[in-house]
Image (tube, rainbow, N blue to C red; front, top):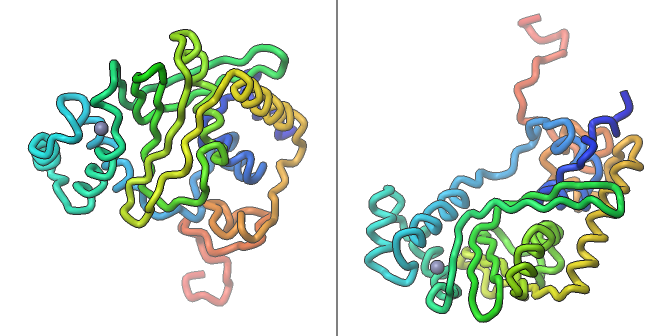
Length: 261
Ligand SMILES: [Zn+2]
């Protein structure tokens, strides 16, 4: 069966699978189309998930700049550690909540593209959306390292912008995307991205063209570039890897000299 049949009629785009596709077609194939477990898992993201969860809880029934409320929430969930407290404080410095008319947390947003073909459905979970000063101010909380100077350089942000754009426009708001880097090692957030109609149209066309390239793929060849491959979570099982390693999966030995054979 040709691999492209794995694409559904309406291709599903998410911030992370689009990021994958722009790095390497085979990465997208392994993850989004085959759903393979990582052979080379990335370091645990437990703390990142925890911080996201705590930030949502803190905002739902109080304010992130209210030290007592933050302490109570963290203690109640058993996560009152200096690292978590520090990340919440770093968020609070940048939080627009005091000026906001409306806020929502961990918002699932979807948007369909029909024409020109091919069709696709983009979905994204947005960490926080604040409405203030005529803006939809969408935030993505980051707990890892920073690799770029501007949000516009982050491919995942292009899908986020696309899904948020229709809502922002319908409400007569401008759209701004900001990534908050909560690790103390990161001094400055990348420059936020404010998109006008022209930029939003360019983003939609960029995504459409990417889905078109997916339909033209025959063999989902890997990029075979050391900088991409060495951190890839499928590098040990990829036929095209420039940096193969040992899979973390349990593998049965095929060495006939081993005693258990
Ligand atoms: Zn806040």
